[in-house]
Length: 303
Image 1 (tube, one colour):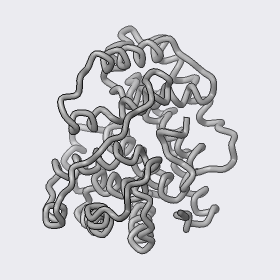
Image 2 (image 1 turned 90 degrees about the horizontal axis):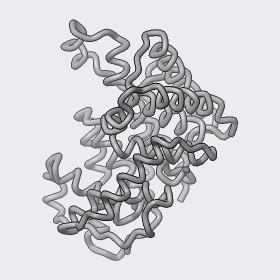
Image 3 (image 1 turned 180 degrees about the vertical axis):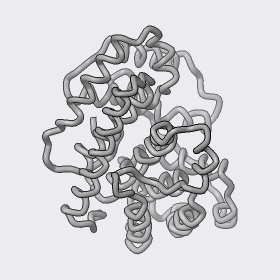
């Protein structure tokens, strides 16, 4: 299926602009002696998406520089285990995969990944929902050769009215199920299934509704799920991508949060807001745009 309806030049421009902002943010962190590992790994992921998913230049120059920063920081942190736990398993496993893609290993990251794999080996899923919640972690471990091949996953079917009236909890469960059942678009769902037809008919409405309410993470996750279902809803995708593109600021970061950030300005600097608010959102924007406009790219299979 062809999703690439943006020109190569437009894709390169947004990637270059975002990459410059991420590199500048890392330099600002170094100047201010900011040592939180989570931000270092988030910048690594963002640069990987820019250079691997949104650029065809293949140099990966910013990525290689950031990897050296990651390795140096890990080796100098006094409490590396606590820092890795704070960063979160999914971000750490993704970062480990990026290093593997460039034939680089770090003993702390490898040990952390092995500990997670061991914990899951000792875990027994209580039900399908429990299994689906842990799917992404298992999938990343499988990509790192620390988990056996994954079994087939299913998802709970919902009536059309339930979908249209779904709250945040139900939508999160829905996206979790879609990701697990399709394994990020690698497995096709039977298109004759009534729920599949209902789902693909209503997902574009849910996506647009989320973006209209500026529920950005929800909208982007639903949009990625539409791609994983391998359904061509070109008008809805065009509208959604136009919205996402309009969220990139001239400096390269994504999102406009002036009303919300006004409440934080008295207690947080612009640098702190960039790290806490704009950096995580920028990663999500880049992730979503890369997977939508570049059909050959999926973040979790890119390493």
